[in-house]
Image 1 (tube, protein in one colour):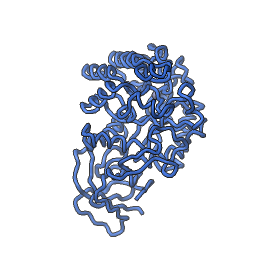
Image 2 (cartoon, rainbow, N blue to C red):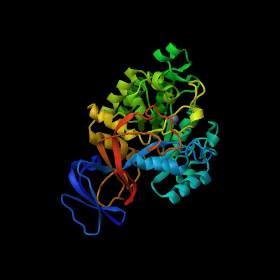
Image 3 (spheres, rainbow, N blue to C red):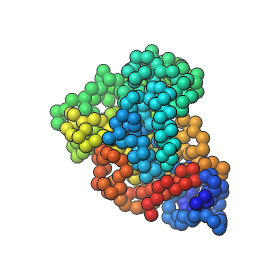
Image 4 (cartoon, rainbow, N blue to C red):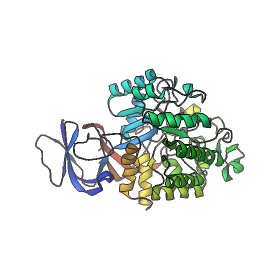
Length: 424
Ligand SMILES: [Zn+2]
């Protein structure tokens, strides 16, 4: 099956302002042609009437728990979730055991993912050795080993001097810093400080914990000229701060998690520990500000923060590990925003594909241009399904959406010209 012909799909590619019905011919792993009525005798034909075809998704934020906590997820199960969700490039976080703070661990991940071969896994390196926040890693050797960015995610980098240095040094090696923005001296509780935390009497994290670190990182990016990418932003004020510094020309980009766009702190009352995530689900006014920032382009991209945990790690709210799985539910969640008229379908594709690819300067993804590697997702916006034991590819099932009705389903994922996921 070296040739694939996709017939009569709705082709969407914001990188070339494309939104029309058409055909795509894939040959030798690359997009050979895009046209109105293509014909190729030897090709495997996908009849795609009523189906959207677009550049496959790029996720700048996943936790695959490999090496060290493979009972939650490993590279293979994580990659299967990715392609089932329409992703063919994912960026994994360094809070593994051992952490990704040496070229050896980065290379382990890259080689193992290449062996599995169904999508691309790009590691981030830690900013500090052991993610302990004390001593910077060797950015150059980690970049050479394949790390595409640097973050201590799982934890924030608290030391401002180290953050300043990291921004300068990563800029010198042509890379960037990503930060989990929550001041850990201010954020020590379990859920957002607000109505729900007072209702159930649980210790909580005030939104200012996020705002303080967002502001600091924007200021340091502004003065150093380094590039900071702010991870999973969730607060109203954070959005205003980012908008302000983007206007000033600071090299600031940011991502949002679909859960923060669709849920508020009240979800804790329905889903308990499965609604516990850091930063926490916020108030409705925060959610509304995020939607506005999505619309006006302040938010650059959507990232899932796919964070698997075992069932026994999601017991009581106090004891539970924070995080949710999200690779397979991102598309139906984002399609909900399209149905609600918040963003267009083309804008959604940009947020999930073209723009994250651009943030990391990744080539050969995030576009359907002729000659590019054939990385595509085909999805049905109307198909209804549930994430359940039958459909879930993760080793974990920590999500508020478990067994809930979802609308919008990936039907094909194509990685470098090969069909790596199919559900028709
Ligand atoms: Zn994080």
